[in-house]
Length: 509
Image (cartoon, rainbow, N blue to C red; front, top):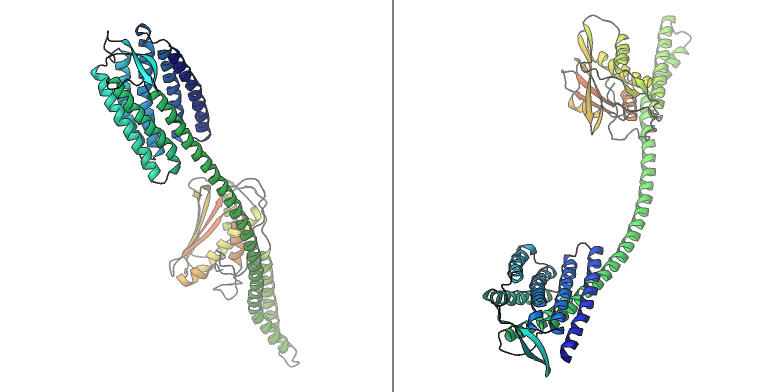
């Protein structure tokens, strides 16, 4: 019985190895949740530790009366181990929908486990001691006749192990070179399985080799997973260094982009100054020419008094026109900083409509069907907005016309607010004029500066709102102003826009 004790001690040593492997790869799976093969292999080695315990008990006391429990435990753990080995091979080989193939094997294994636990594996009364041989030494074990269920399982297990080996070979041939360790272990396990089946069928008298084959298989799989772990770590380091290099390149590119952007902004600002100078020069030249001619006329001593009064009126008118131009220009260029307060738009619009000059045929109407309530805004700036819009609408209509102002709740890009609509029945604008209506200094009125609605647009923008215009020749004009409800917090001044900026700007006034 000396060799039996040695064999039992070897199996006890395998238990410690399998438990260590199970703990290590369970921890590895916890660190790398995306690798399910780590978890399957951790469970497989844990099952093999139970298998080794049963083998150790079987060889430690090879008596028929004491062999049923360890033999049953060994058989059950071996059945589960075969299914887990196949599942591991499916995962390592990256087989799509691996559960579709692993689930039937688990189902078969569960059925055979139930049969084995119910005593349907060995033929009752056939258990006996039998001498087996390993390297010339006699090792005693307990043998018994197996039922047809067990014979069927051996066929299924043989097919499963061959399939496992084939999957590992496929993974190796498709470029997964680290699968070589697992493949060698699977080949050794298949050879051990063939030897054990032959021994079970009394074709040979060699001791069971599958327990030792599982050890080789486990070490081969561990080698495969460790090599892959090291390779993935190297790849992560390479990717990390590559990411650092790319980050440095991106930082340099961003710095270059900032420099180029700064240069473009400087050039655009210079271009805007040149455009502004040209526009101002054009707008100022005509009044100055008129003033110069008037002054020349006033210098004539023989100039009639009546004509002199006319020229003085012209001087006063053109001076006022220049003053208005300069004032509008300063208002437009000045940053708009609002001082929000609780404002009732209904009351504000009532005051605006209240100063509209009364004339025959002109109708004004204000509607607030939803009672939109107050908003937070700058009262003086908002009053300037609606005064300008109402004035433009009145000037766009002849003797007869109707001015309608309405309020309604609205939402713009997830922001709730109030939509104020100013509609007139005036002459309207052509599509060409409407398209240019937001250009600074563009106006269709001889006495206009083209900056009135530019200032209105700036004020609406400072409130976080939006100004839009719809018009058609002969069908009137519809101006919509969206203002968010806002909060009692002062807004930051908006960016200074070039007077030639193509972004939405003023309408014709």
